[in-house]
Amino acid sequence: MSARSTTSRRAAVAVLALAAGATLAVREWPRWLGRHRLVPGGRYADVLEALRDLGAAARLGSLAGLAIPDDAAIKRLREALWSEGLAGLSRRELASAELKEAGGWVLPSSLVELCSLAART
Amino acid sequence: MPDGTTLTPDLAIIGGGAAGISLALALANAPISVVILESGGTDFDPLTQRLYLGSQKGVPYLPLDGSRLRFLGGSTNHWGGWCRPLEAIDFETRSWLPHSGWPFPRQTLEPYFARAQALVEAGPFIYDEPKRWTAVLDTAPLALAQGGIYTSWFQFSKTRGSILPTHFGSRYASDLQRIQNLRLYTYANVTGLRLSTDAAHLDHIDVATLSGRRFTIKPKYTVLAAGAIENARLLLASNDVLRTGVGNSGDCVGRYFADHPIPRDTATMVVFNGKLPGFYRDFIDADGAVVRATFAPNAGYRTSRKALSSLTTVDDAVELDDLGRAAIATAASSLGIDYSAAKAYSLGCGMELAPDPARRVYLTTERDQLGMQRLCLDMRISDSDLESYRASLTELGRQLLAAGTGMIRLDRKTRAEWLSVMDWGNHHMGTTRMHDDPHQGVVDSNLAVHGVPNLFVAGSSTFPTYGASNPTLNLIALTLRLADHIRSFFR
Image 1 (spheres, rainbow over the protein chains, first blue to last red):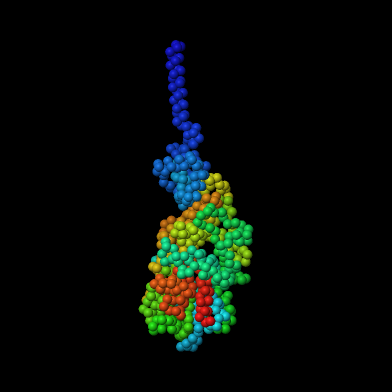
Image 2 (cartoon, rainbow over the protein chains, first blue to last red):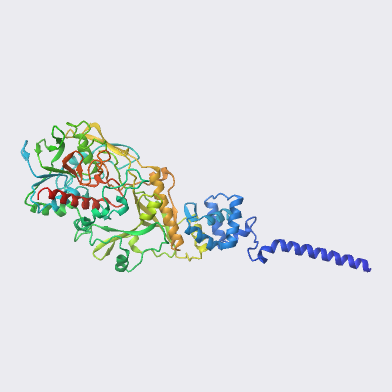
């Protein structure tokens, strides 16, 4: 084996390692930043991670026929979940009467939005 | 009573129901000769009851001969005994609620509530003193987060030694008989309130029996206490001197009719830990009273949210559907609440209606057996009345969930959904409303008919704003105040 081919292999391995590292970094940076991590579940998986009972939320969203929030609302929801967590966010919304209905059930607004997203996973 | 007789008592009371009997009892020791004219006898008589028949239009409502009983004791012969005083805010003029407000505050009636409570035999007058109930019942009400809804209390009329509410006719007949200056005439139907030719005072009262006899009462003072529909009918039909009837210069007689809508299954309430205190669903004996809890909006909420009053009761236990189970699991788990023992209950309520002059009774061309014109009721309920109650339920749901106690599902949204479950309280009110301005009311703050100083009206027909409380206790308190006023004429 020549010295040149050895160098080429090392370079290729390094490129592959860098690519793998970059991919991992892109996927996992939120977890490293301590904010959230991605989970299986599609486009909204990061926010749905806040739910303790994803299945129930999905059933509620589906049975109640909830409309999916617009992108701006999802962005607000994501940011609020990052900063407050779902329990804190829900308590704040209950205190300030930011409420929505899901099949007639009176719930914190963000929880209803999460249910509508969960129904689409 | 021989045909053609004329009686000349100091006071004629038209109607032997809760108001008429309470007034007579309150004047028992006064130097006043009193006659009570009761249309019926001492028991139900279908022929007499038919005098109530009338027509109706608008939203579906109870038949006009259905909510009332035309014999001694009046509608207390079939009432449920639910008692609760009106709240201070019910008396207030609210800029956001047209036609609202009594001509005096609740404090004016305060001295009379205890005596009214004694007449309905509802035990000690406690109501909204939750600490007393909590101590007596050894259980605290459901925890609610700070907000607009609070646990309030009904007390119940209960004849001593019976499970039934006090039926004023049978309960007080012997007391009436013992009053020396009182004569009770049964089967005596008033067919006309006859004004003097100058319309300045009530001159005499025409009375007829179904057997064909007629006689006349010529009293110094008269109190009309025949119920909200008949009070208006008599004033409107007595139009021989004034074309519009008696006390109707402001075109208010018969208008502002009201009842309490009682929609069933308005909402479903879940209690996460399954521990609903019994006094929310059942009548509980406590400290000499029979009580039951209810959810009511407080004055601060009603003012800030421009809300009408309502009294929400917890009814039957219900099973939840898949959606309901999913909602509980989602909400409770998100807030870290154990819901493994959760139970659900349907909610009902009694709502207040906003005063509406178009909700009214008026004379028709049909006539009853005695020749009196029958009435038509134009019954209405506005969307805003329904929305106001729905908002109060939402607030209850918010407070339950914020406290970690439970949650609420609103079961009715559209007008059609509300009307499909609508029942009524049989609480006729408002047709001879009280207002110091004769253009806005029929009687003044002393219950004297405007322009006819010797004619008074007693009963819930004088309520200008209704609240959600059952009217009987309140109309009796108001009548006891009237008794003091009448007594002052004879000092």
